[in-house]
Length: 336
Image 1 (spheres, rainbow, N blue to C red):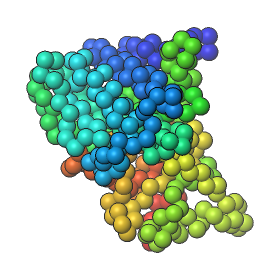
Image 2: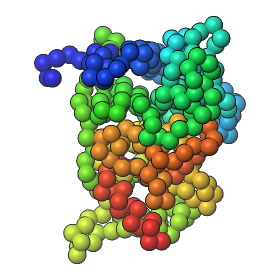
Image 3: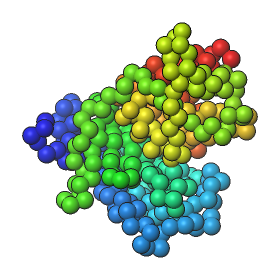
Image 4: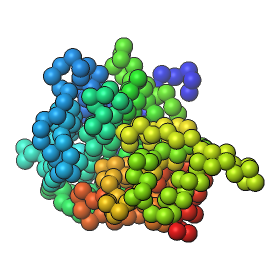
């Protein structure tokens, strides 16, 4: 492996060859998505030099202020993916309804869900942001437009998911259900090259990631867990955990994937159902983490990927990371 230069396109092709009955549609879909990500990266990397920073002064379906880069990234992905004949519909965090494929293009057998720019509130501060995506196989008959039934599937039915993080380097991480692979963009050749082969999350690490500003809004069990994290407990040979929190979910979960630990976004007294979007954030990131050997729950004892959606913009609490860390959190939540 170390003697080969493996682009993401080559990796996709090799993955396709290892899959019985592959037709090439899925591989072409991923290649189109990779192009969209390169286009977004181009403008993210020079955002301060063009008129694309700041707010549009509008709000999205989530009630959040839409940033100019949000709007740009949303449009880039839609336009890059609407004509290939691989999709029967798309859904974006930025849009209230399903995004149909234009009538002049063929309708395919997959649906795409995406968060065009996660962490966009950090754009003006030059903090790492990302794009998150999820791909499902349609369940309705082929040939027509995708419907809610195609989108309202539990996360374990994803056939691929991943994210791109735009930081000191641009990295794309994805899984097609056969391990997790990371590709770093080499700007000199304009290609994503395999840099992280078969990523495995550590079993445990003494790191937790959460917005502690919400501490007094959480359940007793969650507060007890955070208090426990901060303590040295000599009789248990436990040292205090380290807090690491960026405030951009894709960046926090990416760090957790590579270093281990746990990322938490619990429900609170104000948001009983949590705040993360199940379809655009929690499902794809949880699928990646599980494929790397980690765990993901809704913080209420249920495997995150088994939740059956009933709304396009459904929210959920999330506990995701190293398996032993997630088990620690669950023990506290189950005894509250």
